[in-house]
Length: 305
Image (cartoon, rainbow, N blue to C red; front, top):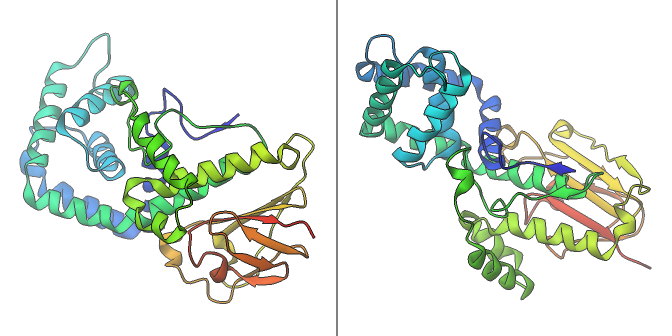
C-alpha cells in the first residue's frame, strides 16, 4: 500500500507538504522564528512554554493555518502529552498545560503576530499545494496499491485528534467529481485551486487510468526513471510505467519559481497525451517548461498508433 495519511497521521499530507517548503527557505524561517519569539515573549509565563514546544507550535500554525483556537488547543495538549517532555497522559503537568493554553490564546489575539503569520503562510502556500499534487500523483502511479484516506481527496489540513473524527463532506466531493466528469476545462480546474479541485482531478485521472489499464501498473509492469537534463534537472522527478505512461512532477517548487530555464526530458518515440490537460506532444526531447505550462504536474499516456 502506498499512502500519504492514515487515521493516526499526526499531520495530514497537505500539512506536511506545506511544511516541506520551509526546507527551501531556512534563513527566512530562522528569521521569522526569532522575530516571533521576541514578539510573543510578553505572553509567556515564566519558563513556559519551553522553546521546543514554542517551535512546534509555530510549525503547526504554519502547516494548518487557518486553524481555530479550539482545534489548536486540543492538538497541542495531545502532542505535548505524547512527547512526554513537559507533561504526559498519566501525570499531567497542570501548570505547564494551563500556561500553554494561555500562551496560545494570547498569540492568537495578537494582531501583529497573526499578520506576520499570514504573510509567511502566503509565502509557502502555493509551493505547498504543488508539493501535494506532486506527491499525490506519485502515490497513485508508483509501484504499489494507492490508498486515499477519507477526506483527503481535497486539501486536508487535519491534525490528529480531534480532526480525524470529523465527518467528511461527501456530498461536496460527489458534486465536484460530477463537474470533473462533465468535462471541466483545465483552466477552470486550476482557477478553483483554493477549493482543492486540482487534487481531486489528479486522483480521479490517475485512478481511472489504473482502472482502464491495470497492466500498466501491476506487479509485472516496468518502472524506469526519467532523467532530466539542464540546470534545473534536480527539480524534476519522473518515471515510466511500462512503455505507455510517463509521470513528471516538480520538487523544491519555491526555489524553482516556475523557471525551468532550458531543462529538458526525453520521452520514448510516439504521440503522448497529457491526461491532466488533454494536450498532446510528440515523444522526443521536450522542454519541461512546456509540459507544466497549464498544470503543475504531468501524467502522459502514449497513444496507440
